[in-house]
Length: 297
Image 1 (tube, one colour):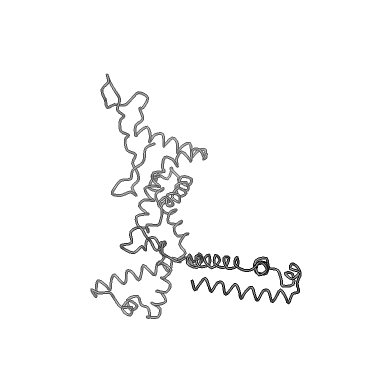
Image 2 (cartoon, rainbow, N blue to C red):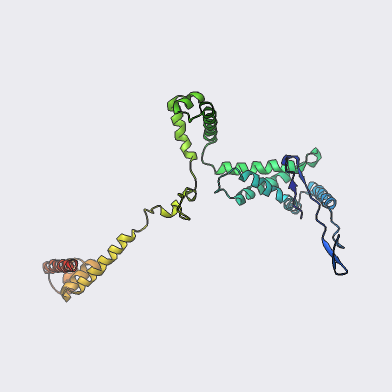
């Protein structure tokens, strides 16, 4: 399949199909430029084939014929997407633009009327570009009126900057736009919505490959320092419990780890609840003393 290439000065005038380079054959073992047998296709043959394909599609509107037309004109989508993408932020993927443009190409093929005498490439490029822009607008959360106001302010700042040879003040800019100072500041507040960019594009100079996304704090993540302290406290507590007497260990284990009540612990040990309360108080005091010994060391 040959790739249609737009005229460099005026892509809107349509696309021309270049003549395929002649294959190189071999005559008596030497390279010979010429057309090999069985490969007689020329630009005229391709053009005639496309005309015939359009006639078949116009008569039957079969999906298979439409898909063949889509494959033939697919390079148009890549060309238009590349032109549109040059004016967009870096985080916009050209592949997404091409995907949107394919829908525009399909729509152009289905709605094209050859009998009107228009060149399909010119018509299709408009439909492809429109489909790409419609998809970009659908993904934009900022109202079109706000975008338009932003462009008005930018043009006004350029005009005043040229006249005054300096950056205009808010009062001068408001007067140029025919707004009050409070109205201009309200517009500024609306325009804050348009100042959202990818974090990776905000990497400070001199940080190499490190971006702000790598240094922003995740407030929901565990604090590694707090985790280490907690693990150390648990280790010291386990060691201190291990140095208690057997009965004190049982009381602490059943109360804090098994979540038994004092009455239930009393039934396990065969003592009264008040006695368990005394054992618990003694165990806690001894445990605290042993932890303080660890801290002092």
